[in-house]
Length: 323
Image (tube, rainbow, N blue to C red):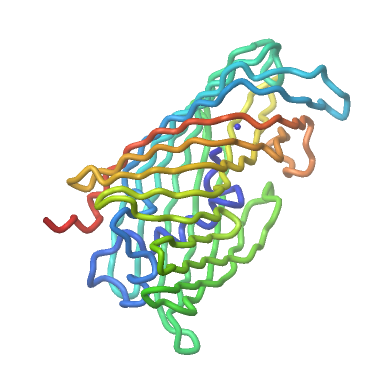
């Protein structure tokens, strides 16, 4: 079950793209603009999406004891996000990211939420991001720092931080490459420091390889003047807070979505997205908020399921399409 956006591994990488994807043409160096320039931007200023999966079974353990196998009869999710930019110039970018997610889960028997088979979870996160652009060894370097909060519909729960440093090694019409490091300031994080690697390669047949490790590996192709098709896998996560016996627990679930993505430029900076394929969940745990992810009390192993996602975004900071 995404989104602890700033605390979980794949989303720790997203600010790197926010740095360069929504800038005005004269706001940052040419090579940085070229790195993520796209008619259909991969990051969205205002976005809302809905996800539905087919039923799937799972096995689980609570405090080390095996629980009977169960089935998730229904999983639904609504996500909404906004990225707002305050300062944009050649050297600095100051922005905020606001996110909300509703998750509805219907199981055969109660699992982690005190006697209820059907549960609704509300999660929100807010982040303030500051980025600085400079030169390192003759290459464009990007340094960023962010501070974020998250919580549920009942309480604010955590304050977290993140710092990144990355260098654009290459930015040509056919090949783009970025490397760096990200540090996550959060006691509950599984990996406090991780490498950053982004790579794009455009082939002569019109396909483009798009890699952002560990978040995604996709091949893309424009199939019309306003449409783009992508094939591959994306990593995502779901997290929310559970209140039980006067204690607060956090549930985190890692997801790998593999399949087909279709994006269409609807005009006036609106973009529609359809995604479908197979969702695998290699890791899902619940742990006391005061402990770390590795000190879990509940663990589940889920069977793959089919998923369907539809979304629409509005990009007022994006470059309007030429008439």
